[in-house]
Structure formats: structure tokens, C-alpha cells
Image (tube, rainbow, N blue to C red; front, side):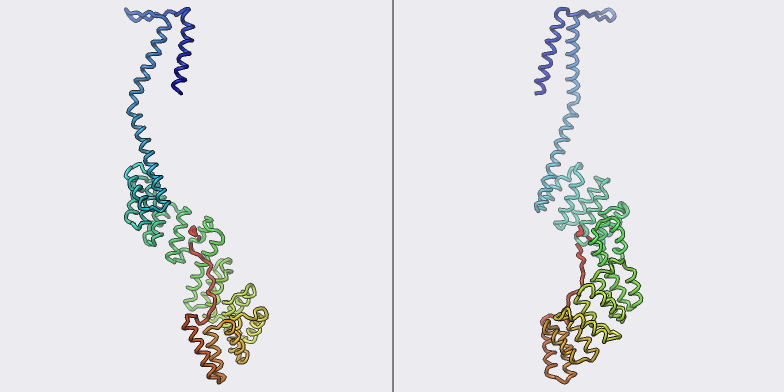
Length: 414
């Protein structure tokens, strides 16, 4: 179509020139030394046009090698793109081995894109060939020096996926130098420290994660609870109440309000003999929301005023008359108050709602004290049967631990 239009324009131009030139073709004289050339203006114009066309044709032949080279480059690029697309499709569809073979062929060209090297490394990692994975990443670094951060991020991610923690730590240490404020670097560091259970480093990382808004408010809260939970447990292991209290006061206020962490703190207070403070916290927490584990801990308190402790628990019974844990708690408090009749009633009621080895053991001990030996033996026997069936001494809900180590991934959200 293009050539047809040009031919039509040339024809129209020729006709126009002929119509103008035929009445008076003009006269041109060109002299040079002893030579001269005479011709009409029309012939001169035709000669000039022919010379121009000839020069253009010669120039086209001159550029043929370059054009052929460009065509070869475009053809090579199209082939590379096609091969890369086919490999990515294979990888997405789960044909990892075929995808890696295609990518390996692609990487023989020095013009392969950096994405091809990274995809090949991921494929090799999925297949369990860590040596080939590292070789692909090394080639990517050599052929694409400007992509060293992307290569290092991919390397750290793949190392973490295989729990190669020492290697990942080395890679991430290098990344902290190359891209200290990178969001991906911070996320990978968080995953590394979680796998290493390095709570101190995670604690140091929490402010950066919050500033970078890499986690939602709820995810950050869950991670903070996990980190500080370990800190509270670590503090309690030194058998120092003052250190435990000081460490608790240093926790962020939102973290202190976590129910699971508060439960652990109260457990440690009771273990270390700080029953007065534990009683105050338990009363406050149970008032905010009913929690069987907290109610159970209330029964373990060695309160200074056991009568007041009994009265408070019996007030709770008005709203929770069939709660087996509350009934067990009242049974234990009644035993400490030497209210044998009440203790027996509460323990029997607790067993009726939910039989546990602990309730049977306490009731057997009480019946033995009351010289009811046969009944006591029967209680001990039933308690031992429950233990033999795999029931723990106190069948209670596990401490609340709302953290899910995922990102999620935290995305990876932690």
C-alpha cells in the first residue's frame, strides 16, 4: 500500500512537470574550464532525480550488514522472550523440572534477563538442588551487577525456606549494608529471628517494623506479645520477683493488656510467692472477662485472707453455677479454710460437671482424712484411670497464644 501511494504521487508529479515544462523546457549551460554542457532544465532535473535515487540505493546497500545484524538481534530477543515465557508457564503449572531445563538453555545467552536467573534459582531450590541454585544466583550477580540487591533478597528468601539459617544470616548481614531500609530486608530478618527464636533481636527489630508499617496493627501486636512473652518467662526463671516486676513494667502498654501474656505473668507471680499482687490482677482480669485459666490460678493463690478469697469466688458462682473449674477452685479454697463439708460438695460437683485427675485426687485426700477409706480409694483409682487415658492432671484450656507465625508471611506477619 505504501509503495502504491508513492508510485501514484510520482506519476502525478511527472504529469505536472510535463505540463509545465513542455511549452518552455528552459535552458541550462554549465561550464568548467574548456568544457561546457548544454541541456534543458527538464533534463537536468531528471538527471538530478536519478542521481539522488542511485545514491539512496547505494546507501541502502552500505547499511545492509547493520540491518541484518539488527534483524538477528531482534530475532534472538524474540526467541529469548519466548523461551522465558514458556519456562514461567511451566513453573506456574508445577512442571518445575521442565521449567528449569528451559531456563538453563536460556541462561546460556549473556543477554538473558535477571528474572530468568532468579526463576532458575527458585526452580532449583524447589527441586532440592541447592548447588545449582547458588550457581544461578552467582551468574546473575556476575552478569547483572546492578541487580545485586534483588539477587541477595532472593538468595536469603530461598535459604530461609530451607531453614539454612546460618547462610541466611550471612546473606542478610550483607543486605543490611546494601539496603538497610529495605522493607524486604526487614521482613526477611523478622522471619530469620523467628526461626532462630532470637527474641532479643526481634525485640530490637519491632520499632523498625512498626515505623515501616510492614505489619498491620494486629500483626505487630501478636509479634510483640510473642517476643515479650519469652522475655517474661526468661525473667521468671531467675527466681527474682523484683526483676519480674521491673521487666513487666518495661513492656509496652498494649502488650501488657494481652490476656495470654497477663496469664503467664500471673502464673510466675504465684510461682515466686507474690500472691498479693497476683490476687489483685486476677480479680481485675476476671472482672473484665471470664477466663477459666485465671479462675484456676485464683484457686492456687495462698491468700492472706482466705475467707475473703472464698467469698469472692462464691460470688462468681452466682453467675457461673456449673463451671467445673470454678467449682474445683472453690473446693481447693475450702480445703485451705478447713471447711470440709463445703470442700466435699464443691469437689463432687466439679467432678459431676467435668471429671479430672486433680479433682479426684483432692476428693480422695479429703475422704481419707474423714476416714472414708473405701471411697477415697475409689477416687484415687478413677483419677489414675483418667491419667492412664492421657488426661492431664488439670484439664484446663492452654494459655492463650494468639500469635501465628506466618506475614504471614507474614506475608510473612509478622
